[in-house]
Length: 349
Image (cartoon, rainbow, N blue to C red; front, side):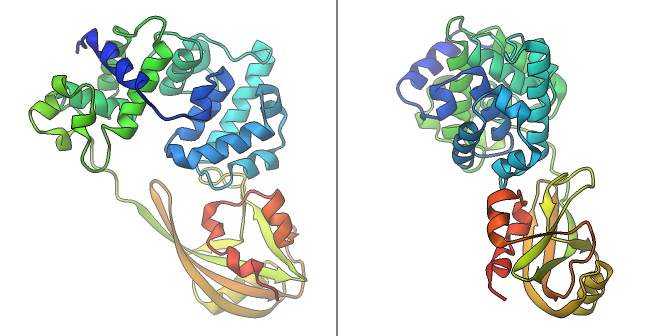
């Protein structure tokens, strides 16, 4: 694959004529770029904005991030999803402090070696924060380039991604590497859209775009069909006692690792099962009432949950932590899946 040297010229002219103002873009210091790129993985820009502002206000630099308490991190990340990202973020911050004295490295290879930083994020930091001619190739960029070149190969192929990365790096404009990276991101996010019809007439590249000229933009990029989402059923207990509710720390590896959650169990259902489960937790249930049901979708998993509100006569299992609704809102990171039931614990007994 070979890209024309005119690509950055046209894109940068379009980018300079007007682009979104973003806090990490307006101040592209390495720490801001890094945090924003981790947050933006699988997450829309508009959803990230308030999280980024809150995160930077609480943890303004690498040292603050490295030394932050886990509960602080999880609370700052609450609702953003993909919580493993924030764990890796702190692990990498600690490594930056220990190995580089708190200075985020500029070399792509050193960035790539940090926990949680892949090819894309390393390229984004190197180009945007340090002006290096390194491409940051994600879904947006793959979509733009495959449409531009009429490339019908599977973008899930590592060799295809590497070829596109190499082709882009051949045309990176020295002196404006960061702007070129962001112009590609901007085009993919605002014009060459993933869902719905792309705004081809507004695209600065449409005269050169094979997908536009051959009217096949809706066929690109080519991706393998997604695997069918797994569905799990959960019974969720909202345990209430003396104006407090019970939460527990999720210890299982994988999804929502180390977050607080409402006690729950898979593949049981009904009021009788809820009462038995509460008894096993040692909370001496006085009453059990069926609450609302909710569905929560993760990337590859769907949870179908039914809640049961249990009035308790004892504190029960040591794994349970009893907190007031106010304490929960202010101090504990709870996943969005549990937030579906917030009305139940905010009600007075």
